[in-house]
Image 1 (cartoon, helix red, strand yellow):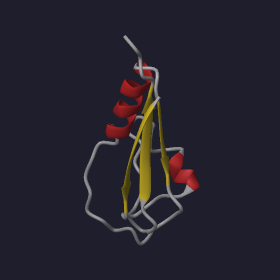
Image 2 (cartoon, rainbow, N blue to C red):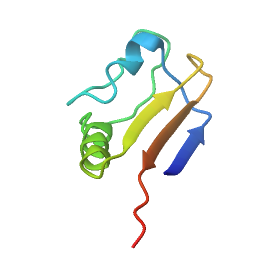
Image 3 (cartoon, helix red, strand yellow):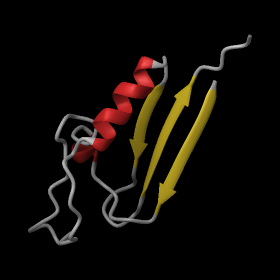
Length: 82
């Protein structure tokens, strides 16, 4: 199994938000919560990534300790031996 992760020190997310981010058009609501960051997007990036990783027999997930604590995005893929 091959595993890769990317960690940032950005806005992070809550457990409730974690259930949204891999859904189609799943975006974390930032405005009015002190997260007024001008980031645009459709909410399709992680959804599409999840579909691709699953098609290859892998898993994808995200972790965060909460607001302003950054995030870690991980995926694993099986390694086939030829």
